[in-house]
Length: 246
Image (cartoon, rainbow, N blue to C red; front, side, top):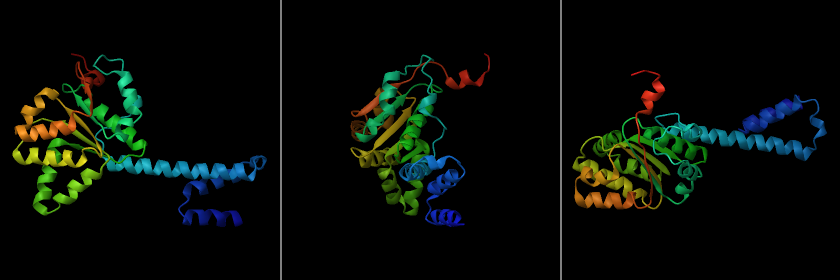
């Protein structure tokens, strides 16, 4: 009876991991071989693991990643310009701690989005707040927010996100509001947060794509000089994994 009350109190305190560990220990006939300190240490470890798992799941849900991709599933065997040593350095997440960016370019289907989501997934697992959005949707949402008065709130939210994944940059010519919005987002994040950008356009074509030379210079200066650049090559990975023949 006393044990059940203890479990109920732990649950009331939202110490779910500790409650589960305590119940598990009661089911182990030889648990008394361990000292009190050892048993208590196991219970505390369980609570810590439970809390970290919950935080990771919360961060992954908030990130809204397009693909359920993990760095453990990156394909290094297919020749497409991925340097495993570079990816291993990025997996350490030092680039996030130094507020650096990642730019992933390459043709359609080369795996740009998968790689971006895999690195973002690792960031979530390491405790970094992450958010994924395609560039056309970003421009649309910013335009809507400007109309309903929530523009400043959305810009602040993007600025505070530790890793922003901006997918499919350069799908269509940019309008003047879009290039100004992109500058606003990049400017607020420069030196304080990290951005992952994917694009079919080679980096040398970005200046022309952005359009306005002054704004293009400002955006590229803040994005490129502290960025890790990955240029994917080869055929479509979607076709490879579809199992279809030519």
